[in-house]
Image (cartoon, rainbow, N blue to C red; front, top):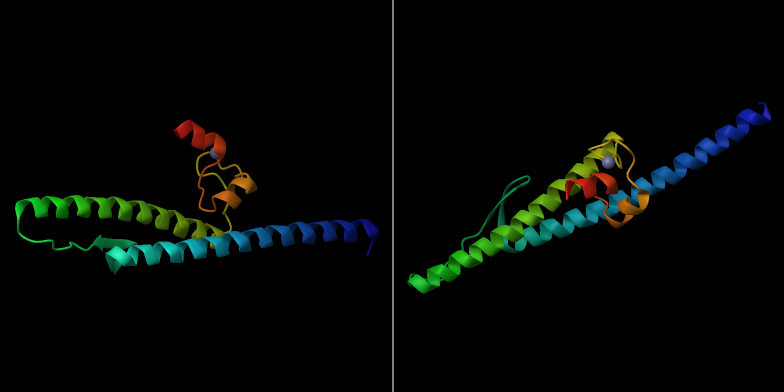
Length: 135
Ligand SMILES: [Zn+2]
Protein backbone atom coordinates (compact mmCIF):
# COMPACT_ATOMS: atom_id res chain seq x y z
CA UNK A 1 0.00 0.00 0.00
CA UNK A 2 1.52 3.41 -0.98
CA UNK A 3 2.35 5.66 1.98
CA UNK A 4 0.02 8.45 0.90
CA UNK A 5 -3.10 6.22 0.95
CA UNK A 6 -2.23 4.75 4.32
CA UNK A 7 -1.72 8.24 5.71
CA UNK A 8 -5.08 9.56 4.54
CA UNK A 9 -6.78 6.42 5.85
CA UNK A 10 -5.33 7.03 9.33
CA UNK A 11 -6.49 10.67 9.33
CA UNK A 12 -9.97 9.66 8.24
CA UNK A 13 -10.20 6.99 10.95
CA UNK A 14 -9.07 9.45 13.63
CA UNK A 15 -11.63 12.05 12.55
CA UNK A 16 -14.40 9.47 12.68
CA UNK A 17 -13.32 8.31 16.13
CA UNK A 18 -13.54 11.85 17.50
CA UNK A 19 -16.94 12.35 15.90
CA UNK A 20 -18.35 9.10 17.28
CA UNK A 21 -17.04 9.88 20.74
CA UNK A 22 -18.62 13.33 20.60
CA UNK A 23 -21.96 11.85 19.53
CA UNK A 24 -21.78 9.15 22.22
CA UNK A 25 -21.22 11.80 24.89
CA UNK A 26 -24.09 13.94 23.61
CA UNK A 27 -26.30 10.86 23.44
CA UNK A 28 -25.64 9.83 27.03
CA UNK A 29 -26.26 13.42 28.18
CA UNK A 30 -29.53 13.54 26.26
CA UNK A 31 -30.62 10.17 27.66
CA UNK A 32 -29.80 11.38 31.18
CA UNK A 33 -31.78 14.58 30.59
CA UNK A 34 -34.70 12.57 29.20
CA UNK A 35 -34.76 10.40 32.34
CA UNK A 36 -34.69 13.52 34.52
CA UNK A 37 -37.60 15.07 32.64
CA UNK A 38 -39.61 11.84 32.83
CA UNK A 39 -38.97 11.65 36.57
CA UNK A 40 -40.06 15.27 37.03
CA UNK A 41 -43.17 14.75 34.95
CA UNK A 42 -44.11 11.70 36.99
CA UNK A 43 -44.08 13.68 40.26
CA UNK A 44 -47.13 15.76 39.38
CA UNK A 45 -48.56 14.02 36.35
CA UNK A 46 -49.98 10.76 35.11
CA UNK A 47 -48.64 9.35 31.90
CA UNK A 48 -51.32 9.03 29.26
CA UNK A 49 -49.20 8.02 26.30
CA UNK A 50 -45.73 8.65 24.90
CA UNK A 51 -45.09 12.41 24.76
CA UNK A 52 -48.57 13.09 26.09
CA UNK A 53 -49.13 13.86 29.76
CA UNK A 54 -52.00 15.35 31.68
CA UNK A 55 -51.67 17.03 35.05
CA UNK A 56 -53.43 15.65 38.08
CA UNK A 57 -56.16 17.94 39.36
CA UNK A 58 -55.51 18.11 43.09
CA UNK A 59 -58.67 18.35 45.17
CA UNK A 60 -58.39 21.12 47.77
CA UNK A 61 -62.07 21.37 48.75
CA UNK A 62 -65.35 22.99 47.76
CA UNK A 63 -65.01 26.54 49.12
CA UNK A 64 -64.67 29.25 46.51
CA UNK A 65 -61.30 30.61 47.71
CA UNK A 66 -59.92 27.09 47.90
CA UNK A 67 -61.02 26.43 44.34
CA UNK A 68 -59.19 29.56 43.22
CA UNK A 69 -56.02 28.24 44.84
CA UNK A 70 -56.61 24.92 43.16
CA UNK A 71 -56.91 26.50 39.71
CA UNK A 72 -53.83 28.67 40.26
CA UNK A 73 -51.85 25.61 41.31
CA UNK A 74 -53.17 23.66 38.37
CA UNK A 75 -52.08 26.38 35.96
CA UNK A 76 -48.65 26.53 37.59
CA UNK A 77 -48.28 22.76 37.24
CA UNK A 78 -49.49 22.95 33.68
CA UNK A 79 -46.92 25.56 32.64
CA UNK A 80 -44.13 23.58 34.31
CA UNK A 81 -45.43 20.49 32.57
CA UNK A 82 -45.53 22.36 29.26
CA UNK A 83 -41.91 23.46 29.70
CA UNK A 84 -40.86 19.90 30.52
CA UNK A 85 -42.83 18.53 27.57
CA UNK A 86 -41.09 20.92 25.19
CA UNK A 87 -37.71 19.92 26.65
CA UNK A 88 -38.62 16.25 26.32
CA UNK A 89 -39.74 16.80 22.73
CA UNK A 90 -36.43 18.50 21.87
CA UNK A 91 -34.37 15.83 23.66
CA UNK A 92 -36.21 13.02 21.83
CA UNK A 93 -35.76 14.87 18.55
CA UNK A 94 -32.02 15.22 19.16
CA UNK A 95 -31.73 11.51 20.04
CA UNK A 96 -33.58 10.62 16.84
CA UNK A 97 -31.18 12.82 14.86
CA UNK A 98 -28.18 11.02 16.38
CA UNK A 99 -29.69 7.71 15.22
CA UNK A 100 -30.42 9.13 11.77
CA UNK A 101 -26.93 10.63 11.49
CA UNK A 102 -27.97 14.27 11.03
CA UNK A 103 -27.39 15.44 14.59
CA UNK A 104 -25.70 18.82 15.05
CA UNK A 105 -27.02 20.46 11.89
CA UNK A 106 -28.96 23.71 12.18
CA UNK A 107 -32.64 23.25 11.30
CA UNK A 108 -32.79 26.73 9.79
CA UNK A 109 -29.62 27.13 7.68
CA UNK A 110 -28.49 23.43 7.65
CA UNK A 111 -24.95 24.40 8.66
CA UNK A 112 -23.18 22.49 11.45
CA UNK A 113 -23.87 23.85 14.93
CA UNK A 114 -20.77 24.83 16.95
CA UNK A 115 -19.77 21.70 18.95
CA UNK A 116 -19.23 23.93 22.01
CA UNK A 117 -22.88 24.95 21.79
CA UNK A 118 -23.93 21.30 21.53
CA UNK A 119 -21.80 20.47 24.57
CA UNK A 120 -23.54 23.18 26.58
CA UNK A 121 -26.97 22.49 25.11
CA UNK A 122 -27.16 18.99 23.55
CA UNK A 123 -30.75 19.42 22.33
CA UNK A 124 -29.99 22.61 20.37
CA UNK A 125 -31.74 22.61 16.98
CA UNK A 126 -30.41 25.88 15.58
CA UNK A 127 -26.98 27.52 15.38
CA UNK A 128 -26.22 30.69 17.35
CA UNK A 129 -26.72 32.94 14.30
CA UNK A 130 -30.19 31.59 13.54
CA UNK A 131 -31.10 31.51 17.24
CA UNK A 132 -30.22 35.21 17.54
CA UNK A 133 -32.29 36.04 14.48
CA UNK A 134 -35.36 34.24 15.84
CA UNK A 135 -35.25 36.10 19.17
ZN1 LIG B 1 -28.35 28.23 11.41
